[in-house]
Structures are given as C-alpha cells and as structure tokens.
Length: 512
Image (tube, rainbow, N blue to C red; front, side, top):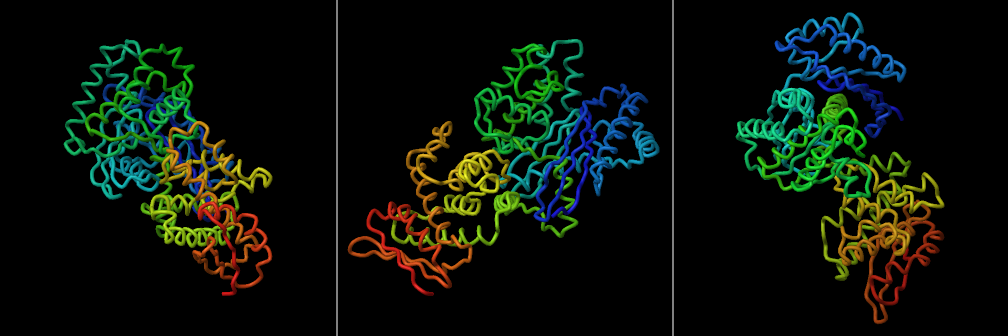
C-alpha cells in the first residue's frame, strides 16, 4: 500500500538532482525517479562570492523543469534543499526570492551543520559499524563527522569541494598535472590536520556522494567484482591508491570512456580521490567503505521518523528491518516466514545440544535471515525459485549487511541442493573456507527441511526434539491439527537432517 511520495531536489554546487521516493506501509523507500543536471552553480560565483544572474537563471530553469516532473508524479511532499553554492553566495536572499517568485518553490538553505547531520543520519541508519568517520564531498564543501556507538559526536564542514579544488589547483593546467596534485594533497592534509578529533581515530571511513560512488564503481570493474551495488563496498588504502594512479594515467578523453566513471566527473575525480586517500592516512582507518545513502536519504528518513514516531528507521535493528522489507517487496507471507524461522531455531538448538554445531551468534543471524527470505524468488517464477532467489538477494543493497553476509544469506535462502550451491559460489570461492561452505550447505538443508514441515502454512508443528537411539536418532515433531502435507514433505527432505546426524533417522509425529 502506498503511504506517500516524497520528492527531494538537491541543489548542489556541481549538480542539481531530483529524486522521487515512493514510501510503502513497511517504510520501504522505492526510488521511482532520479534525474540530474550538471549545473555547476559554483562557477557562477565571482571572487566576492556573488552569484551572477546567469547562474540564477540556470537554477530557475532547472527547478521549473524538476517541479513539473514532481507534479506529474503526484508528489505529496516536495523538499528543495540548497547547499554550499547557495549558502556561500553573498546574494543568497535575492536568489531565494527570485526562485520563490518565478517557480513557487521555497528553497530550504541547509546550514553546514545540518548538511553534515543529514549525511551522518543516513549512515547511522543504513550501515552496521557502531563507530566511524563519514565524509561527503560535494562541489563546494566537504562534510566530515565522527560518530561513536551510533551517536554523532563531532562534525566539521570544510569550505572546499571537488569544484573548488579544481579551481584552486588546476586552473589552466591538465587534470592530472603532478605538481598541482602534490600541492592540492598538501593543502588537504593541512586542512584535515587542523581538526584534532580526526587524528588516528582508527575507525572505518564511510564515504557518500557521487564522487565516492564513481570511485567504487571504477574499482569494482577493475577487479571484475561480481556483485551489483556499491552500498557497503569496502576498499583499502592500496585500492584507493590504485584508482587515483589509474585516473592520473589517463587523458580526459580516456576517462570519459572509463567504465564506471560518470562523464561529468572526469575532471573532478582526481581531487575527490586525493581527499579520500589523505583522510584515510589522517584517520589511520582500517577500511574505507561506501554508502549509497547520503544527504538526500537522510533528510527523507528523518522526515519519516518524525512523522511516524520513529517507527520507520532504527539505528540498532538495521539488518532485520532491511530483510523484512525485502521479503515484503516480493510478497513473502510474514507469518509463513516467521514460522519457518521458529522451526529452524528449534532444529538448530537441538543440533547444538547434540554437539553437531557450536553456537555462533553471527551464523545464527545469517540462519535467521536466510530462513526468513527462503525462496522469495518464487514471486518471479516458481520453476526457477532458487536461481531467482540467489540473484535477487546477492544483488540487492541490504542495509546493515556486508557483501559477504549478503552472499551467505543468498546461498541459504536459495538452497536446493549442493550442486547448485557450488554453481552459485563460482567467483566467490576465495571468500570462503571449505569448512564455511560445508556449514552453509548444512544450514541450507536445515532451512529446506523446516520449510517442508510447514508445507500447509498452517503452523501445525509446535515443538521439535531429537533423541539419540541405539541405531541412530528419533526426530520427534509435536503437532496440532492435520499433518498430511507435512508428513509427506518431511519424508522427502529427511536426508538433510540425516546427513548431519550420520545415521538412521526415524521421524515421529506426536500430538502436542
């Protein structure tokens, strides 16, 4: 059920973008439109930071166009927010007044601290690290924050972005001029060193924005990365160095044809990459990762949390929320998924009691999510449920879940047989040990058996016990109601439990 449509116009220094989100009753944010234009408003500011009328006219033209798109999509709430280019303009009051008069749009001018806050808000609600540094580099400013235990501690807005760095250091020079790059690097290093709370924090860095996304996209193509999406994608210092070395080695014409790099960022990508490298060194970060959620999402997420009493997005229950929303998007019946998880838990507890598995909270989490999402691909096509399930989950941006965890959940949720697991693992074998693969296959079998003993979707199985006998084991299934479907399916899938117990398995249905 459609809850509402929200349109957000992000008026940046480099680009102006309209994103329209469709919000359903589960607070899933479906992006149904995303258009941008590289207006580069910053180039219309003179030395005294006054925006020319030509720049204002460009802004008004774009906003009129975007407003008509929003009207066509029947947007219920339109949020036009302006950042550094307008904020730093000495004639910003005149700009806002002209926009109001000629378009009917009331721009919200974001102060530096709010721009940093909203980017941080998005990261806190969509990534799994409890503490970290965020960076959002735009055209005319760079926002950096530090959060600890999911609470914002510090923020700073630097009055430079990719456009201003280009103007400061590359005016009249090639985009990859070595001396210009060195001077820029020294400048950025001094800027970061002036903020004492950044020094040697040794926490992950989370980068947002188009420049960060472009660098991740390029790196993924360079290493032939098999998964889609950059949200949660991890890079290390040598990876960042390889991308900046690549950008420096190519001409503008070659950069325009580089897979993963937007053509309107070819002359700006080196400044962005240098900023990221320099920050990594200053923080002594263990990892550098990317968030596909930033300022725009942060504004909408806070709006929804405020409107719906903080029920929309949690900072501590991110993974569970995103799994529930993905399931709902493919019309998974919640009560069926919940019963499957309950049955899997019972089987897992019994197998741990017998010493088949050692209890492991991280694996339990994957087991829960895999069983909840089991065969969600049947919504696409029943005959290829396993294949669709693996593809959907492994290629979905799952907030609060790492890429390796995403693949593990996809393997569990799509489990049909061991041959298919090995097929799906092609390209990921270096991510797992043989022991881990065996465990994932075993867990997949448990999920498949649990699904079988809820075949009627009537939640007839109430409890499960496994008892050791002279010849093997008794699997006792306590039930209420009619078990014809469950009896048949349990016998067909008994091999998955029998294999774990290494002996004869006797399945006994007992009235509860």
